[in-house]
Image 1 (spheres, helix red, strand yellow):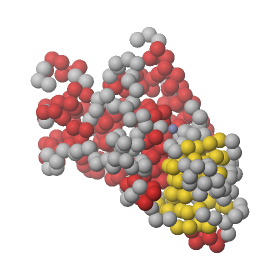
Image 2: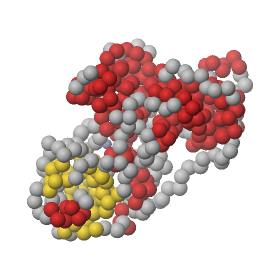
Image 3: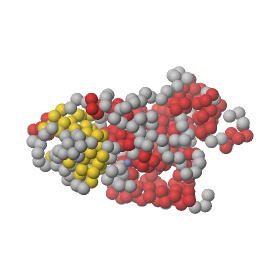
Image 4: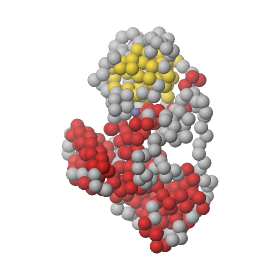
Length: 213
Length: 192
Ligand SMILES: [Zn+2]
């Protein structure tokens, strides 16, 4: 498995255990939609969590717990499968955040034809959609922490590696990269960081502050 | 489900399907008796108070009843289904975080159908295999894996608990996962 296009075990383990922060989890859940191999790995890690649950020393429930549970169970309707949106090009977990498909979001210009759409998360992670016109450099940048970039439409190349719809790039602070969007149509990606991006060039600091990158 | 003789060997999947298909309370009471005390124990281990753990354990099993119709034994074992509900309740109620999740019915899901497994093993057996592989792990490796499922911020918490540098914690987890893979592979392809 090519680790540059898939999720490493530490992120998948944290996701399976329930300790992964919201923004990362959004990128993970969205990538899982496209990727059977990471889905299977997630399933294997959930099986470890299940084994851990089975190993727990049983803690006696209160008297009358079963009857109380039955009453709760029957106080609401059985759950039905959720509505799926046929023909959507946006993974369901991301769609829940956007309230629409990726081609219907409101963009804010960042200059050079590049646009972004910020996604609210309840924690320290910062998530955004980026829209990069064909053949355009994403401004060269470094970051202090981790950056996950999931391609949703189009493609980008970083060095000699290409990323297409569904592929995820996992970059840490040692990576100083200059992704370039592919020539055929704009590249739309979900980018998640836990620290502000630091642009080396190209984008004035004023815009960086204004755009909350 | 009224066959009392077979009850102890009844796989959880059959009980959960009986809940889904006929609202079988007897089947549900057996699931409750086994899983509710373990879910409560898991929640206590996550730092909830005894009354909150009791409450969320009851809620988890109540959700199991309501979601029974969505259960697909081809895709998960009943115990994994319960683990997911308990974990998601824990994230929601104890950690007060949101958890973005894959939608198993998403039309974008590729490939839409999982490939058929090469042998017709029940998912229940898979969990049993993971449990025995976990038991074979060196104690230090087993410990970091278990702690990864119980701590809110596992790497720093484990480092503090075991008085180890974070780098050592991370590499020990990696080693433990690799060892587990080897054990599961060997046990699956070796003697049955
Ligand atoms: Zn993947």
